[in-house]
Image (cartoon, rainbow, N blue to C red; front, side, top):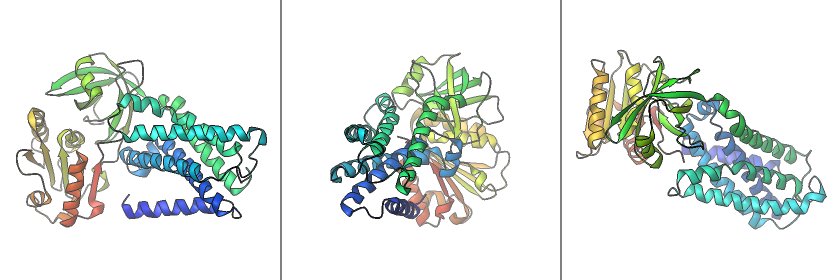
Length: 409
């Protein structure tokens, strides 16, 4: 979703929240009530996104895009709760039951502290994933406390009013999302066994076999994997490099952090792996009859490996631009070249020692005007942002650009 559409949606939601508040509420109380409602809505939407449902993946255009929304919804939730706490002048009603009003006020303050803590941890990338994961498990209880505060503290609306019914619906969405993720989500997981491990410099190619049911996925999608290296669930997203028609799942996982480093030494044949997927909407099925440009940076080559496997003999020209560095890059160039074989896919390789890949260097390799191509990218965010800006300035239609985000935290 582009900036203009995002701004319109934000404005629409904000105005809707403002107008569901009691009409006769004085401004000094309506403003903090508005921020409180925004915070509740943001938290509920963030928890809905964290469920990783297939319908949401399709609706938003990919789970990677959904987690961008998740991040900003979290920020909105923290800012809304903080603004409410700073601006609220004091008790404004009786709540559902006056007996619980004082306690409702007190727990609301603690919920705000918890929300600020979670928000701070999420914003600091240097904090280890494990701490981030554990603290995010507290989001459900914090939201439930916020719901208690909303309905049992001294609030200026009744449960049967438009405000009360709307907030009740938001509360139900948030609580149901948390319960689903905590209890029922695991029923959709599939169990696989590691059948093969191959080293590729500082990466490993892992092949998995399903024990019973297998996941449903398309080429170019990714899955969340828990290699069960310890007693606590740790799902991480990795792109699927196999073809859906194959009997096995395969992944190429590069050593880019603590978790992936552990896989290099601890992963063994026969290891049980929990798989959740496939996700992502980076699929060329959207416009299969148009000429295409594929842009891959480093480990971002992985979705295109499955695309190459799925490509028989494309009628339209396909250009794959692959940039990287080091031994891993050279080995992947060799692998990709072998996979392409005689297929009508033109591979353009560019080592980091050469000039940076640019719109000019891409355009000069194409036989048609840039506006006629569908462009798909996977790689480091700075690289993709730069190339998108350059290509659009050279004539690429913004709607013809498709990419997947590397960072989902």
